[in-house]
Image 1 (tube, rainbow, N blue to C red):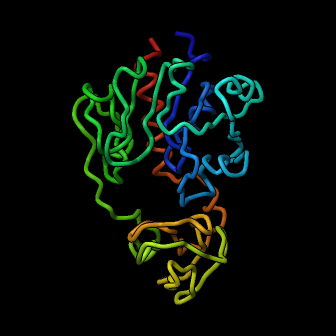
Image 2 (image 1 turned 90 degrees about the vertical axis):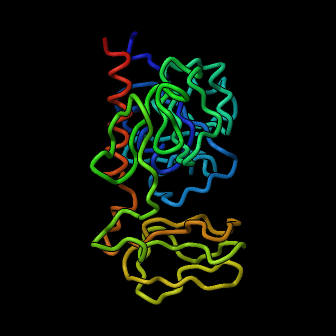
Length: 266
């Protein structure tokens, strides 16, 4: 197969999906992403799904552009940009006929992806059985297996523990105390101190447990459910980190690239 013309369809537009799309676009594959009409990404500084709201989103030199119909995809590729389309069920695959489909929804369960969707179907993280629902699985758990290509079996179960920064895990993350509307006057990149009110849900204030930079934050006005992840605080205070793909995500993206080359670079 001519790798220069290899088409990759990625389900999802959040942080992990975007890191995968970024690496594959840099590798000169023709990448297209699908999303819902109202993405709920928290790490918006590095999430291409922001293009669904804003028209375009740039992450580390790669720009995603929203398209309204499958017929616009080729034109966006000619602009050296990455098309993203509202298509939750990835029905565009019937037109694109991708060589690779990557399920990067990170739902911890299979949301309809089938091994017959493409010559190579890759599932990220828990919820997929290699050789049955997908051809291969890429490990997403932050363990010694991170980024590993799994050709038989499943990924590790999700621990639910955030990646540690400065030795801090749960303290860094904001979760919704109830159902309701998320409201904030903060933005990604803002500095906060421990005890500062970062946002509110249903009039209940959310205070920062630690000081640092707001690394991730849901869009203002979003309606959320109890327990939903709303944001993250990075105690390092490094504002550049808010717009930089994390090492964990790069490792996952590397696993996807490895899986593609294992299949087609023959």
